[in-house]
Image (cartoon, rainbow, N blue to C red):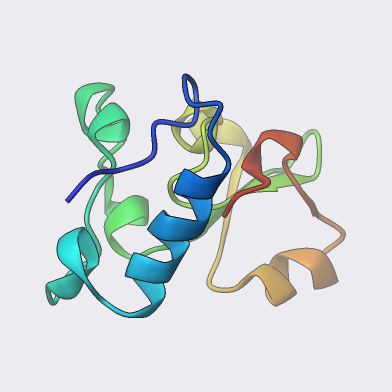
Length: 103
């Protein structure tokens, strides 16, 4: 019932274990709703976009952020473009944020 805290872990095996739990809907991911990472909850990133699992694109940089990525809640409201899927973001000329590699 633990979450990999990417900022501090150096053990790459934990990423596999977390991914396996997500895919098999065990532990934190066994409920009907996707859990909110504790670091996002504390920073107030639990927004309507997050609840809907929308992808936030930055219209200035053309970089998109997935829910749960470190910079997800940092895109200024005036620069936000929301997408339902990664494919849609890419088709609009956006690329995934570099710090979003494990999502």
